[in-house]
Length: 516
Image (cartoon, rainbow, N blue to C red):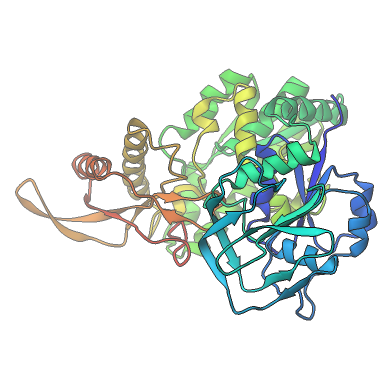
């Protein structure tokens, strides 16, 4: 496979740095995020095709604010600045940035000037998403302003070639009209990037890497039922076949049908060797009487480690296991500081810790990918759609969607209610439009109701449909009333001990997505 082109996103502490990288990849160009203190020599050594400078919370003229080394602009690499990156670029090249008193936040009308290279083919006026208190008041020498808003005369600029350019607004945010068009135009038409980054070559590349790394040795993988571990396992299975053993810990906290998806559908689709550990009794015993959310999380994590450790030892008795496969994604890498994989799994966040004598070399085939790319790869490899499109689901499972003690009875109630919600959202064609819909059981609450001509004291069920791209922020999803009515009627008719369904209409912030 030909060497892929690389676009580097320099992160100045932006809320949206990951989103910029995703937008570049959506233009079929590979991108990675690097911190703003990365040395120029290191950046140049990676031979990027282009660089994008992210936004950030600082003022460029404030003490301690991240700066751009002017030598970066002397390396001949095309550079595009966004928000703080736009201002840092202006400052580094001799322009002027100042606090004008004209802040802009949220949706703002932007007027493009004729003849701009980066805005070619776009309307003269459109809405963009702004978030700034400082402004570029004088463009650097050799640059011209090519767009303005009512409060910001220089809201976009470019040099004569367009290879050095930038915008004050956030083109990566969906609220910015034509944002993706601006980025694509710059990357493909001005810089000349080849749009060759696809799920197909991702899969091919990762399979080849795993083959070369593992050779004749053996690997183990913990399957959770989610898309990340499933796709990671599918890649490694395609690379080394029977040298991979997957372990599925059935802790009894999954939703209806999810254990079967792993045990039957995934195995049938991939042919993977699967060891199933029925640990339901162990987890229920450990959770008995526990109501504190954090304690629940810790217990579930601890018991998972114990079960996985035991399974790993069993497998190691018949064959030497050298590698551990994990579904670590690119956002995980970025959020944890971007360090390299460790040889000892005990320090890795996905598993949480194994004893010192259980040491593996990590295989993280999804380490360079975002969630949408993982799904594409999964479909490419034939992973069942029910797993590929499964909505995000917390590691502790239904254990943290029960407010109160986790019992067989409360799990049964929540499982049935959750299944109805998922089924109705699917029938309404909404399960891919909303990001996820946690269903919560208030097990410690009983409210009065009337069912069958009699008074009842049942539990409320909470629906938490949210729209989000990255879980950092979320808005509650405006589901049609007819769908909500169907869900409520079915739950109160079909699920025992439930006489009330409520809708959570809180954004994040201030509310989290999960209740616990």
